[in-house]
Image 1 (cartoon, rainbow, N blue to C red):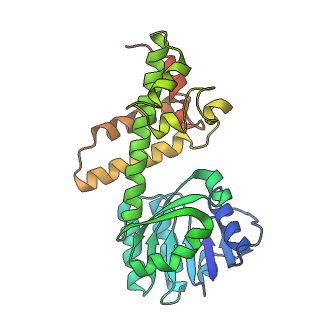
Image 2: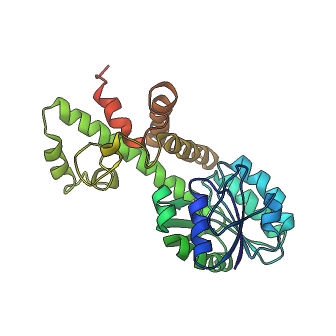
Length: 290
């Protein structure tokens, strides 16, 4: 396919490189001066989108997505697919899908899970919203860039799945870190704590696959000074999106709301900015009850 790829940062760059490596004709654009192996660079987003069978975007937020969409949709030909892999608010995803549909385009919102390592290794998971026809056109590209793609429903469903998943992740990571800090104060060995919880009713991905305690469980950012795999800043972004969506949908999410408040405190007022989201554990270690 002829593919336009807009947004070639830490995630988009490796994704575009994997598409080029698989033999697709990829033209990219980014506001920064970047060079991606196998990707021809265009002078504008509209130029990258012109004549493309599929245009993929990987952008920081919904406002930028709306701006880029307004630039590229007029440049795309009827029947082409607009696949947005950014993590943005559901309202922006649906607005852009409506704009694309009005121009005769197929639209998919397909945020990803798997981080920079997954982008480089082609092992991302895609959560996709859009029509069955739109998903079918994008699916072969998802197979190159990732290991799994789930069609979650109509426009916006991919974003809804992503923010619901990451709200659970933020809440469970906080609970896991709290439990390790409590175990420390109760004199319980961390390895024993892990051995019990990881095989009992308290097990979770945060405990079993991404343990926040250094030297316990599989290798994780905790074993690398909490250098991010998944930055606390990004977790905070996703928690804010979850609460924005909860407000729009009139949903009661008290745990998600509290998780957002705790990560806001951690990132904005403490030392969490630039650290992995599991660095909540040393935060709780230093704190007392009051």
